[in-house]
Image 1: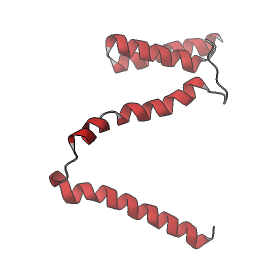
Image 2: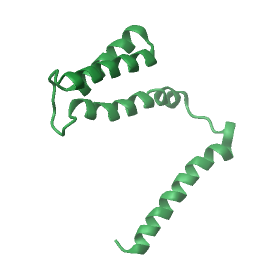
Image 3: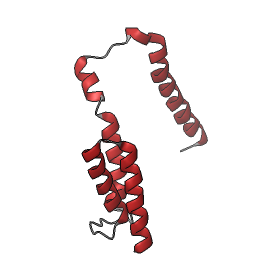
Length: 107
């Protein structure tokens, strides 16, 4: 790509991002999504978090490692179990970090 093509792509992405963000300010409360879309948007944070965490937990070195020697996977499973049992996110994070740290120190 030429230099002008890079700048055109950057300016195009800037315009698209600005238009999307400005639409919420310009339309404000008049912008209403259908009920089905609002329900679907509630699942976006969990889907994005899963998409970020799963590859790192399952394949930290680039290949899938499902053994207990994989501290990332064990810490993630512990975090899921603690959050599911107690429903407290901070507790799940603290306990999973402690388990992860202990495994990294021991192995």
